[in-house]
Each structure stands twice: as structure tokens, then as C-alpha cells.
Picture 1 (cartoon, helix red, strand yellow):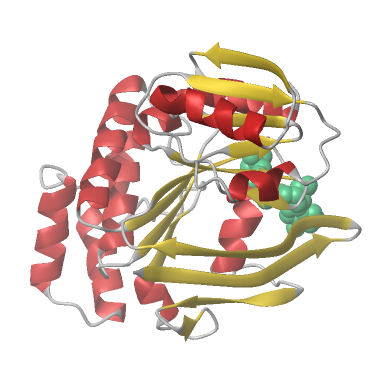
Picture 2: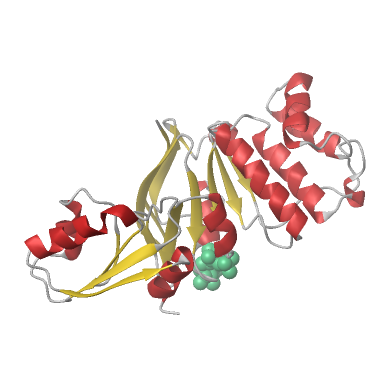
Length: 291
Ligand SMILES: Nc1ncnc2c1ncn2[C@@H]1O[C@H](COP(=O)(O)OP(=O)(O)OP(=O)(O)O)[C@@H](O)[C@H]1O
């Protein structure tokens, strides 16, 4: 079931095209890792989805409701990278404030407190919270309206290993509840552990057809770069899963590597080399961004 639909979202700052005609859908229960170096446009994409950023064109809807409509924000919530809590108030005060805006009952607050596990400190003033405790409260706030989708902008920044483990667990709990989540982070290890769906953002483009399975290695098949047909359209006809970067095909379908090779040879594509690597996301990142 489609949760979020983005159609031709475009944003430039001066001459810099940060989002070039982004069109995509997010389905129920998707857990997507958004990757890109500093300045690639991850925050801009999230902010544009939430209409916190004025865009040059495009439409964003959740269940058919536009992001220009305030009801949108019941269904799509945001975990920003900056901490915007009021230190004088308690965690409970924050939850009650949001519950009041959306006319939710005490029951909803209690449910969220238990789900996120913040009962032992929810009545304390936020100024006494550690960074991890604040992050938990922000997540509790972000799920109060039972959203369909949560956008998390670098939620692991500044967390110690314990808090990282807890946050990963929390994200898995939300994912099990069929909430769709987009997480941007610079930590490839965390992402690799969390999800097999990774989106790369680079120079205004979004690469989404990368879906890594559970296998712990990845194949890179380099083919001659002068094939007649575009490699992308040739591979699309193959019904195999793949990611293409220039003249290289990446796949984590380990058992069926022969199928890829046979398909390419059948189509008279010359294979330059086949490599297998272990740290697949890091390898992909290095190839994609030319590190
Ligand atoms: N208000 C602004 N005015 C001008 N340029 C901006 C503005 N906000 C962002 N940019 C530019 O847009 C590009 C994308 O920025 P964005 O913050 O979305 O990147 P990011 O991928 O989230 O980066 P980071 O990983 O460093 O957080 C960058 O080149 C940035 O300099």
C-alpha cells in the first residue's frame, strides 16, 4: 500500500539543483536508509516533503492529502537533527502539548510512553535528560499521532554506543508496527545493520533501485562500456535485481550470479571483470561517490 507519493519535486538554491524532479513512492512498512555526503540534499529532501522548504515545483501527498494541508502532519512526522525541546518542561508536558493539538486522549500518551520505554523519567524536567533520553522523547512525540511515515534526519548523531543500540531497537519496533521510516545517516555500518533498502542521493539525483538482501557479500560485474543498448534497459528486461553505476552492475543475489553472467553473455555483452566484496554498502558508497 502506497503511503507517500512524491511527484516531480524540484528544488534549487541559486544555480545549484539540489533536487531534480524527484518522483517516488514510499510503501507501508518501508524502512529506507538515505545516504549521501555532506551537502548532497538529504535534509533538503526531508524538509521539502514536509513543506518546511519552499520548492520550485512538484507535489507531495500522503493518502491523497497534500503537504499544504495541516492533516498531512498527522500522517508524516519529522525527527529533525536539531533538538528543539523545551528544557524547563517535562517529557510528559511535551507529549500533553502535542496530544492537545491533535485532540488525543491520555490513553494515547500512556501507550507511547510504554512503547518507547520512557516511563521512569517522563515526569522529570527535560534539562536533566541525557542526549539519548531526549532522542527517545522526540521519537515518542513523533509517533503520538500514529503516523504512517516518520522522517528521521541523522538521528544517530552524537549518541553513545548504548543509545545507538537502543535507537536501532526502537526503529525496529516502529518498523514492526508497519510504520514507514526514512533514516538519513552518515554511518554505513548502522544502516547496513538496520535495513536492506538504501537510497543514494548525489548531485540532485536519487538512486533507489538498490535493495540488498541478507547475504553478506556483493558482486560487482564490470562490462564493456560501449554496449549498444543502455545497460539499464537491458537489465530491466532481465527480471534480476541489480543496481547500475556507470558500466558496473552490483548485485547481492549470491546464489544466482551465474544467471547474471549467462544473461549478459546471451545478450552479447562483454564482461570485463567480476568481483566479490564483503562490506557491500561501503563498497557501493565508494563506487558511487568515487571515494
Ligand atoms: N538555505 C540555504 N541556502 C542556500 N543553500 C542551501 C540552503 N540550505 C541548503 N543549501 C545547500 O543545499 C545543498 C544540500 O544541503 P542539505 O543540507 O540538504 O544536505 P545534506 O545532505 O543534508 O548534508 P549534511 O549531510 O551535511 O547534513 C548544500 O549544497 C547546501 O549548501
